[in-house]
Amino acid sequence: MSQTNKPLSKTQIKFLRSKAHKLKPVVMIGDKGLTENVLEEINLALSHHELIKVRIRTEERDDKKAMISEICKQTKAQEVQVIGHVVALYRRSDDVKIVLPK
Image (cartoon, rainbow, N blue to C red):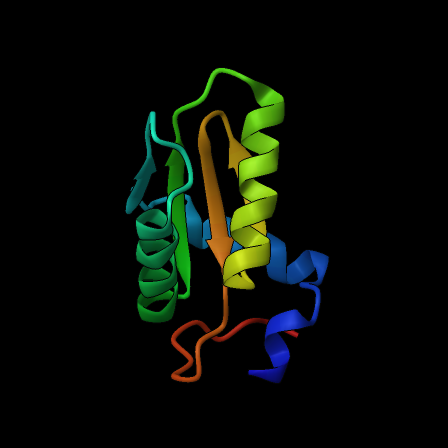
């Protein structure tokens, strides 16, 4: 778990972006915003897949940024990429599924 807080290198982010490209969002954040249940879903998905996409339905750019930073803080995940309303998140799990380049 010690690797979780280590920032990703540019090479690793590029690698994760290419992997995230074909993924579909597994969690949707709707009108109710970032609830405990949503955070729990994101945590489960990260533990299971390591790399996930989350769709955030909000019109306000600042709200979206705040939500993404809150998700990252609460789940100890790292933001890989944001395109429109979709954010790709990565968190290494104890049972490593994605081997990152150095």
